[in-house]
Image (cartoon, rainbow over all chains, first blue to last red; front, side, top):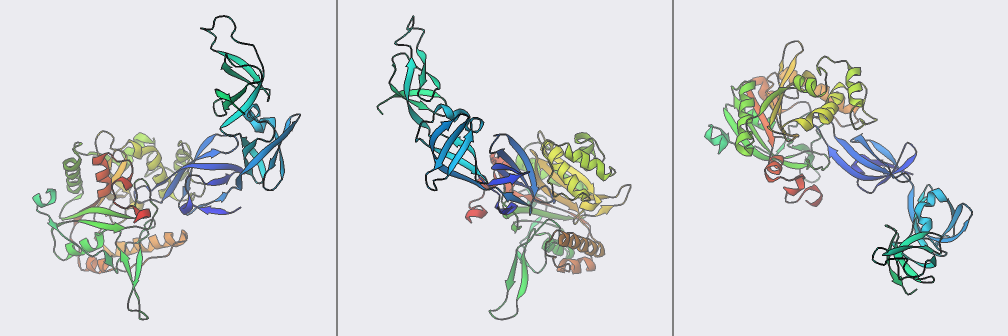
Length: 189
Length: 298
C-alpha cells in the first residue's frame, strides 16, 4: 500500500509487519541522553488478537496495511461457509466458521454486520452490539424450585443457546448483548 | 536562591546565534534572516545556552547560571517537547567531582530526595547488564541487546557501538537509576564525550555525568573540553556521522571556537531539564502536563 514514516506514527495506524496486519495501539517517543530518537510501539495482530512490542529508529519507515472496515449483510450459511454481502459494492464474501468465530451465534438473515478486510480479504466479522433473536426451544416455566432456578437455557433461531429468565417462552423475542452473550430483555420485534 | 547563595551571577544570553552545536543526534532549528530580496544569513535557535555561556567564561566570568528556553527539532513525547527550558550553570575552577557535588546539592535542595549516589557507567553496566561497557566486544553488546524484553530496531547498524550501548542503557539500566535516591552516572565512554574532556587512561573516559531521578535523565554535565583543536575534530566526526544518517551537515566553525583558541578556563558546566524537574515535583506523567501549550498546540 504505502510507506509510513516514524514521524507519522500514532495510535490507530494499521500496518503490515512480516506480512501480517497489525493495529498500532501505543506509540512512545524516547530519546536516551545524547542518543538517537526511538519509537517504542505496541501492536495488536488484527487476526489473532495477540500483541507485540517493537521499536523503530526515528526516520525508519514501515508498510501500511490495506485494512478496511465495511458494512456487510449476512446472506446465508452453506455448510461450513458463511456468506456476507457488501451493501455498497454488492460484492460477496465467504468466511469460514473459524473466521466467523462466536458471531455465528448472533447472525440471522439480512443482519448488517461490521467486517474487516485485509488486502480485500475478510478477516473478522462483528455483529451489532445488540441483536433480537427468536426462541425456538426452551423448557416451559421453571423447573423445580424457583428460588434456585433463576435462568434456564434457551435455544434461539441461530441454533445458539443463551441463559434466559425462567418466564420466557418459545416464540418470544429476546435481546442479547453480543459482546457478553447475556440476555438483556424481551423485545417486541 | 540556590545559585545566588553560592555567589553565582545570573546571566541572559541570546537565543538566536550564528553558532550551533554539531552533534549526530541533535537537530537545531534555523532561520534565514535578512532584508527582503537581499542577502540572507543563517541563524540558529539555541539547543542549549552552552556556547554563549562558555564565551562569557572565556571573557572572565567566574560562576554563572541561566534559566532559558531552548529548541531541538524532534518529536513530542512524554518527556520531550521541541521547545523546553534548561537551567544551566558554569563554575570556573571546579573539578569533575566538585561539579557533581554541586549538581547533587541542587537536586537535593529542589527535590528533597537526599544527595545523589555516584555510579560509574562501567559499574552500572556491570551490575545491571553483566558486562564491561568499555571493553566488551561488539558481539557481546549485540547479544545482550537481543536479550532485552523488547527487540532493538531492525535498522540499528551493526557497527554502531554507541547505538548498542545506548540501547542497553535505556532498556536494562536507566529504569533502575534514581528510584530511591537520585543517581549521578559518570565516566562515560570516550566516544560519547560531546563537549567534555577525555581523561587519559586504560580505557580513556569522558568526564561527563548525568543525573537520574526515578529513571529519568534530568541533567547532563561536563568537565568542559578546553582544546579548540579537539572540538574541531569532534565536529568533523559528528558531521561525518550526520551525513551517513542522511542529515545535513552543520557549520563546524563558531565564535565559541574562537574564544577557546584565546583560552577557556578550566570549568565544570551542567544543564538541567527544568520541565522534567517540575514533572517530578508535581508527580506528572507527561511533559505536556507542565507546559502551557505543548508543541502540537503552540
